[in-house]
Length: 215
Image (cartoon, rainbow, N blue to C red; front, side, top):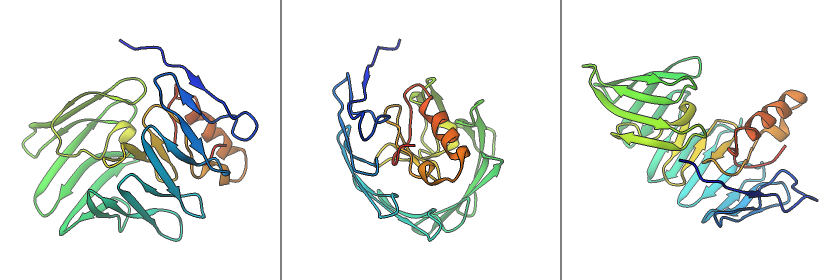
């Protein structure tokens, strides 16, 4: 059962594509570059390169190419290489085919297998004995509608990284805030029309979006 939610775009002069308020009471403000500063009970800080720096208790660090390499919040997580995450002394390796995670190895012995939905979202995770250890289902807009188990709480809708500190998904070149406000970091900086097409695609995901500069 879905309720009707109305979005207001109240800054037509400077940010015509930016949601400024939602009928459920959430309000959003933006900086001159279109980055969200406040909204839905959170505050955001940005680097000079328009990359998300701080949100809530989470602090991000990036390499020279703009890829996130460290996150501090609920503990500290390092991302030294693509597909690797390090928390304390535990190293987790994620194995992908294309953009989808199909398996992971945590430490030296914990192996898990991922069974994804048609959008690449993590649906079922099983262990080495084919026993289900996690089940996650989503509504059409990416909100979790059913959750059982929590062996991997950070990979969710479309298989992207979920930051539990802020409930924001990390998509590599941008962040996505739930199903509400579109906030994209890189699309504006992508040369040519391809970047704009990507931005329009995310804007059309029925009210979903990414965190940062608007195209």
